[in-house]
Length: 144
Image 1 (tube, rainbow, N blue to C red):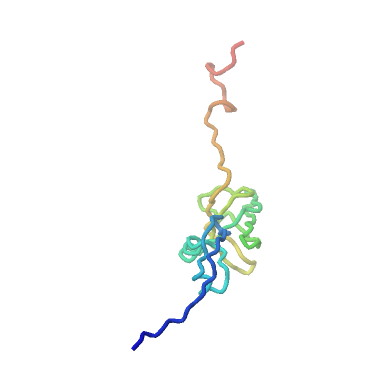
Image 2: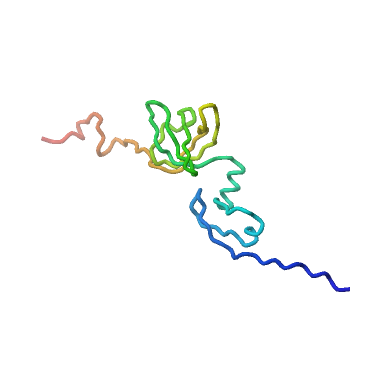
């Protein structure tokens, strides 16, 4: 008795894609292409992290610390409201900051929850050295 032959499957060639979350290049294998209908937009790492944390990424469009709110542009281009209560230990956000957040919904629409800054300009602290505008001491005053 001869063993039954298995049907042959022709798989597409592997493709290199760019993750829209983190920007790295990743391989979408022929087997994954055969199995999955849609082209993945995120690398396997970002897909796994999203399933675990349900955190979105976006870029701060604007934030007004006096009013205590602003907007984040999500990866898909939509705008997400952010209130100062969602910042936790962050004091403020700046335009262009890349942030991670959980997405909430209420009657006003989508809003950010538990916002964390992933990248952006860090505020410099005054060290009391050059450029410090505090009171001058006798040793630091210019000689006449």
